[in-house]
Image (cartoon, rainbow, N blue to C red; front, side, top):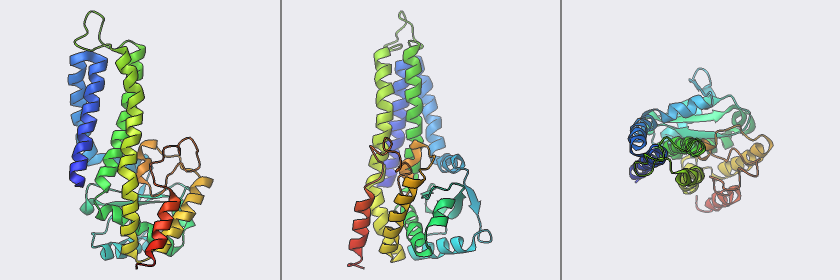
Length: 285
C-alpha cells in the first residue's frame, strides 16, 4: 500500500512539473520540465533522506559517541523486529525527532539536542518507539518523498510567479498551445503551495495516530509517549524550530506549534487527541 502511495506521489510530482513547464514555455517548456521531473524522481527516491538530514546539519553518532541513546534504539529495534537504524543528532535546542530512509534496512532516527535535554529516559523511549513505528509501518520513504515534493511545489510556485511577471518564455505569436499563459501561471503560483500543504496533511495525520499506537505497543509504555508529547508540545511553543515547512510533517510534533499562522493548517493531528488515545490504551495493555 505504501509503495502504491509513493508511486502516486512521484506521479504527482511529474504531472505538476510538466504542467508548469507547459504554462511557462509551451511544448518546449513541457519537455524540459518532464526531464527535470525525471531527475527529481530519481533524487527523491535515492537521496531525499540524505537531503533532509543535511538540511538540519544532523550528525551520525555511534555507540561509542552516545552509548545510552544508541543502546535504547538498538533494544527497541529488537523489540520491534527491525534492524537497528542509524542514529543522528540535530544541533537544535527545539525538542523534536523524526525518522527517514528508503526502507527498514536503511532506516534513520534523528533527535534534536533539545529533545535529549528535555525528556526523561522513559519518555525518550516512547518517542524512539514512535519513530521506529514509522520505519516498521514503512512510512519513512513516503514521508521523505512528500517533503521533497512539498519543496518542489514551492519552487514551482516561484517559477510560476516569475513566469507571470515576465509573461512566460513563450511569445504572443508563438503560443504553442499555452506558452505565456499568465492567468494559468498565476493560478499555478497559488495552487502549488496549497497542494503541497494538502499533500503533507494527507500523508501525516493518519500516520501519526498509527505510529503512536504501534510505538506504544513496541515500548509497552503508552503513558511515557503521552507524557513526552505533552512536554514536546510545550517545549516547541517555547522554542519553535527554524524548520523548513516542506519537512514539517516528518517530525513527531509540529515544529511550528508556537507560530499561529503556520499552525493554521497543521500537518499533525491535535496533540490533545493523540494523548487521549494513548491514555485510553492503558486499559487495553
